[in-house]
Length: 100
Image (cartoon, rainbow, N blue to C red):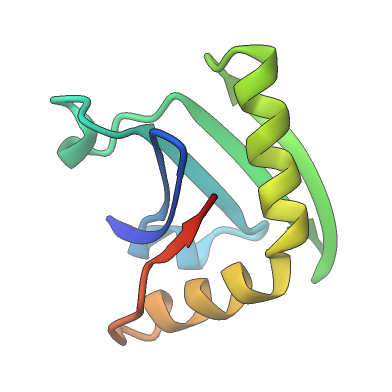
């Protein structure tokens, strides 16, 4: 799992296998969840379509408040998150973004 950002008690992540999917997305994992190392997520959020920004929730177990905060953060840091995703997919180390 490629951790790209921390926000509140959540980790925004991508998986190397996601590089082959035709639409970029982020997995949201609750920090401290015993299952997080296995890739179990609490939400999957599409962040683009055909290379253009388009943020949509694929599915979510988040509260409406947490979901809104995460979507807002993805929108605000979209360019930076995409650069981090590119680096993860290229096998490079990244600095994990801490979003407040």
